Image 1 (cartoon, rainbow, N blue to C red):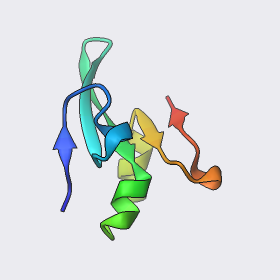
Image 2 (spheres, helix red, strand yellow):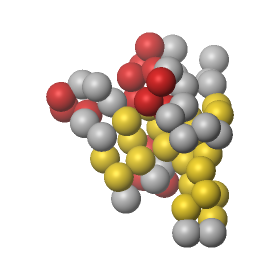
Image 3 (cartoon, rainbow, N blue to C red):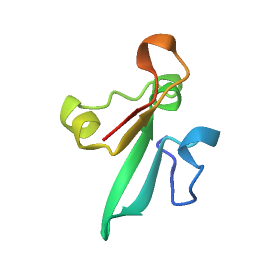
Amino acid sequence: MLLVGESPDFATSGGTAVFRLVDGGVRFDLNLDQANLKKLKLDAKLLKAANQIVSDRADNSVTQK
């Protein structure tokens, strides 16, 4: 199940994706830990388009565009 929300801390508190307003446009953040936990396979194009990728794993630390 893909959990999507819009609160600022949704991706860091257990959600998989969160939509946010950035520079007048809608962007999204992804939580890789939650996606992996739910056995979701996220396409590389989706990861590239994400504004921020959140993960607690050392090799997948938080990245932001």
